[in-house]
Image (cartoon, rainbow, N blue to C red; front, side, top):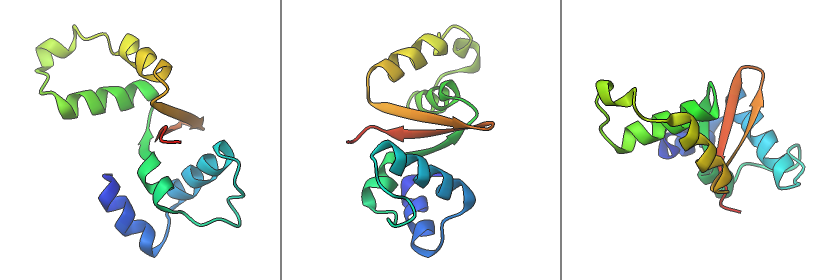
Length: 106
């Protein structure tokens, strides 16, 4: 879900995924998620829920670049995910089977 779609949705009501993401976000920046309400910083930071951080990297990379299927087998997405994680640009938390990905704008 794109950030603009998420912004519209959150104006009305947060779904369960957003509630979990907001709790994780607040814990990361030391806010009380029960007293705080989502603001633009959260909306801009939350990038979505994926099966893994590597799935986020694959989705993002292939959204930016048109990677033909026969070429995608040669891309080392595991190393790319390690590099993106080490860059400090992103952080994520895994809850159950879901990986909540955030941009590190703090």
